[in-house]
Each structure stands twice: as C-alpha cells, then as structure tokens.
Image (cartoon, rainbow, N blue to C red):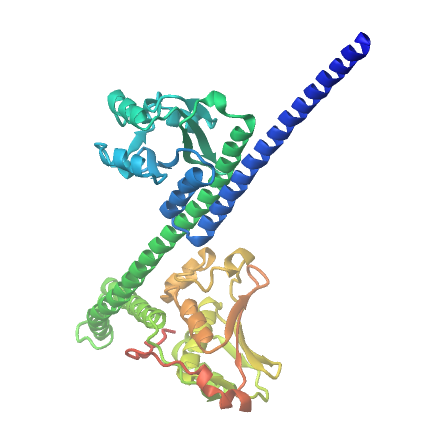
Length: 493
C-alpha cells in the first residue's frame, strides 16, 4: 500500500515537472511570437514610412516613433554621419511629452547636436568605428563632446533611463550612422528574442535610409546639374556673342590689310625688291588665312546657336557639280594642272537647301584639291538606291589612316600627316565640321573612307531624293530659327 502511494506521488511529481516545463516552453513561444509580432508591426510601419516620402528627416522621425510605438521602448534615436560637419548629427528622436520638455531645456537644440568624429571615448563614435553594437547604462557615454556629465546624468535621472542599446546602420556600400534604443528596465530583464528584434529592425532601417540617402544624393546632383546646365547655356551664348563680335571686328581690319597688300603687289607704282615682294606675299597669304578662319568661326557660331535657316527644294546634282567644277577650275586648278572627272548619269533630284548644299560641296571639293598632287585627278560620282542620292568625291592625295578617320569631322580636325599641305593652302580645320552640321540639318549623312596612307581618300554624302512624298511633307525638312536668321560666310577654296 505504502509503495503504491509513493509511486503515485512520484508520478504526480513527474507530471507536474513535465507540465511546468511545457508551460515554460509555451510561455517562451508566446513571448517569441509577441516579439515577432512587434517586429512585424514595426517593419510594416517602416515600409509605410519609406513609401510615403523620400525626404530623409520625415522617414527618420517615423522610424523612431515606431521604436516607441510598435517595439515598445521608451524612445529611439537616429544620428547620421555628416562629413561636412565632421561628426554624427542627431536627426530624430521619438515623440514623448516628458522627453520633449527635457530636450527643450537643453542648452543645444537636439537637431543641432553633433558628436565630433575625434571623440573616440563617445560610444556612438565607437559603434560606427567598429561597426558593432554596444550597450551602456549611462547617457553621458552617448553625449561626450556635446554635454557635461551633470547635464547628462540629470537628464537620465529625470526620465528614469536604465540603458541604451546602440546599433550601427551599415549597408554593403557604407556606414550611414547609428540608431539607439533607450529602455527603462535593466539589460538583465531582456530575453535573447528582444536582441534579435533590435538587430533585425536596425538592419531594415539601414536599408531604408540608404535608399533615402541615394535619392537625396540623386536629387541634389540633378539640381546641381540643372544649375550647371543653365550656366553652360549662358556661357555658350556669351561665347557665341563673343565669337560673332570678335570675328566681325577682326574681319574689317584684315580685309583692309589684304586689300592694301594686294594693291602693293599688283598696282604699285614703285618697283618692289624681291625681298619686299616676298614679305608682301606672306602678308597676303596670312591675312587670307585669318579671314578664312574668321568666316569659318562665324559659320560655326551661327550653326551652333541655331541661327541658320534651311529652305530645301529639288536640286539637280549634275548641274550643281558642273558649276562647282567650273568655279574651282578657273580659280585654282590651272595653277596645279588638276584633272576633274564628273561621272554624269541620269539622277533624280535631291531635296536640299541649294545654298547650304553648294557650301558643303565646295568644302569637300576644295579639301580634295588641297591634298591632290600636281597633275592629279579628282573624281566626282553618284550612287542611288531610290531613296537617297550618294555623292562621292575621290582624290589621289596622301590618304588617311584608320586611326585618323574619326577625327576628320571635329573642330580643328586637321591630321598630323596633312599638316604641311593644310598649312600651305590656308586651311582652318573647320570646313568638314561645318559640312557635317549642314548635311545633318538637311537630313543627310556625310562620311570619309580611305584605303590607307598614300592611296587617296573618298568623301561621300547622301541626301534624300525629292520624291512626291518628301515634297508633300516638305515642312519636316524646313528649319526656321525663332530668332535672327543669318546667312553663311563664303567658303575659301
């Protein structure tokens, strides 16, 4: 009988112990679920904050409010790195009436408090340096370099603060700052689940703030670029105005110098010595070169500032090329015995501005003439696919290397191997750049090719055919500047 009672007692004790363990385990699970629920609510609050605004300070304020409201701590605070101020700048702290009253009495406004980077004894600086979380039970550890111990200790005592958990806000790219949780209970009363909650929430806050900072950086950069772009437009206009005024002012005296030099050489009543004649010829050549440069600069200024009008119409390519060959032949070809070959064939007319197209062809033909050897040959031919007409000008000059082809249509795009030829012919290196811009304004393309050095070069351009459809939609090809319209200066051959 006694043995039965003992056995029953032992059995009851075992049952009680098992029930106690189950109860404790159940409580732990409930506590864990409670912490997880608080974390989920805080994360939901965080996502809402991130979606509601992209401004940094409002997001930070909603984060610290979630630390108090959803996570249940006395308050939370965020401080971010500010390189300009050289320290950690406090951004936001949870809203609480008692806390607000204490903060109001502080000698430095909360948002203006900065912990210098050189305060290595400050827990906040230690956290961003080590990138590891820390705990302290003294508020002064977070306020070293900002307030005295008396102020910090009085504030902690007034609000019954027991401890501070400080976490770094770290992303893959950088350390953003810190976030800390203030509690009114000792650290010993916290479970491991509580630390997991703080750690997880800190990581999510770092992610949200990193995105907000990226957006701020992008917004600031966009603003700076906008200001810089406006400034560049102003400078570009000033440049155009300067080039225009300076070019006009230069051309007037240069024209006078050229005229007097020519008169001295050809209409002088005084016999010139060979040396003096040589000097006058050099003056005349240099003056013509400078006038050509001024004309080209004026043309570039007018094209780039949008003051060129394009009035396209059907143009007969063959007839235009004959006129250009005649003009060039009687002005320059006879001096060097250059042979022009025009491959005439039946061609549809192209839709182009006759004046601008003539300018382009004079540039290309004149360029071929500069680099053609004495007794050389220049061939002008055509190709068409029914939509565009391609006009090509082929010379027997020094040719162009593959490396130099890409530099041809840039400003002052003279090539090293052609320097001597260009210099002796008064080239500016701007003709092809002007031609490219004019052709593109007429909805065409221009390019160059060469089989290599010593094998000549071919310059080609294509323009749309003046078909019924193109002429019907002629307005698309017209360009009418809103401001003053200026014509082009003549091309130097």
